[in-house]
Amino acid sequence: MVNLPVVAIVGRPNVGKSTLFNCLVQKRIAIVHRQPGVTRDRVVAECLLGSRPFTVVDTGGIESSVPSGYDEQIRAEANLALEMANVIVLVVDARDGVTPVDRSLAKKLRSARKPVILAVNKIDHPNQRLADTEFAVLAFSDILPVSAAHNRGIMELVEQIERYLPERAPDEPKTGPAVSIKLAIIGRPNVGKSSLINAILRHHRTIVSPAAGTTRDSIDVPYERDGKHYVLIDTAGIRARRRHNTSVEVFSVMRSEKSIKRADICVLVIDASDRVTAQDKKIAGLIQQNQKPCIVLVNKLDLVKPPTGVHDFIDGLLNQIRAELFFLRYAPIDLVSAHTGENLKRLFESVARIQKHAARSIGTGSLNRLLQEAIAAATPPVRANKRFKLLYATQIDKASNHLLTPPKFVLFVNHPELLTDDYRRYLETKIRERNGYYGLPIIMRVRSRH
Image (tube, rainbow, N blue to C red; front, side, top):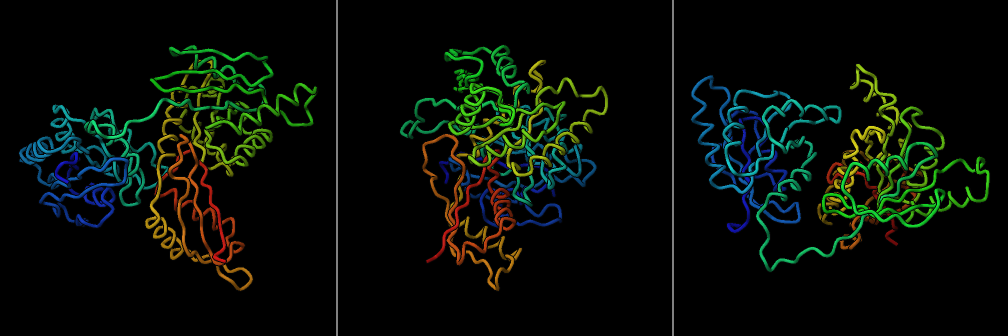
């Protein structure tokens, strides 16, 4: 373990450093207690959650209850982390906001030539998603919301840490050739699919070679951005079948449906001024039916965004779309304007996040413990005087070479027909709480023990 990269966790008492430490090492090593100053010595263990192991050091907390004289403690804490660590994780408490101790410690860490990740802890509810924004005053580029108590955001933190770890040894295997990610831009007519692609191509340097075709065909557009390769599939608009006026339009819909099947990620474009229509739901159903990773892109934001009360308007818009597309709950929603270019980068940020989550896996032992704990916490319903029992579970296709293969799990049970849809969704939710799987459907296959 001495040869592994070192990550130091620093911060004042009671911000959740020890709880975060235990999450990273997957063991209850550091003592967690509300009394400030419990962790006074360094606690060291190995993190194996990501693709590369590293050593985690839980350092003693900066004493924030002392009104004066804490500068020396801050200096000692920062110097300790700076001396031993390759990466520093500064933990702050979202409930307390920015404190003087946080500011002093951040000032010291900013002066160092070492990467610092700001982990805003105790964001325990999705409604707190903006609670980390006030910590931008600490002037760190990497700010991640986490909940160590509920194991949320931990994998995102690990992935961010890995970005700053020293380069691998020369004899370690290297990645293969670049592979293009196929993004199918789909939706009903006039929601701005082609305008969206044109905006992407216009606002960035690109390598573009559109394939031959008419406006009714699905057109593949190779695109390079930030060293990554994509194929933007511009599909013909999908209308309700009763509105297919010609055989050409029928074939265009068929091509669009085929584009969904061959895509790595489906980008469902919705018109913000129309909200979610019945045809939008049907297209979303095709994505769900094909079990595809998905991003919901709400276009034409410039036409509907009010001059005041923007946050309340956006919250209402997101809630309405999420309610209408409840069956596509795994898909993130991004609000953009192809006309003005507003927020277009969020599409590719979501794509990158989906790609990271697709590489995640759960070990068989961890998966079975997780599901058994979930079943113990919420007993399955009784059907025909029988109760669903899980005998064994495992994740399959983990070694797939495909960039964006959705996670697949096989559950061996007593009677497959006893697993209700509601309880299946409950188990899926518990898996997502552990590993996220942002933008990815979870495929769960149930088999009998016989």
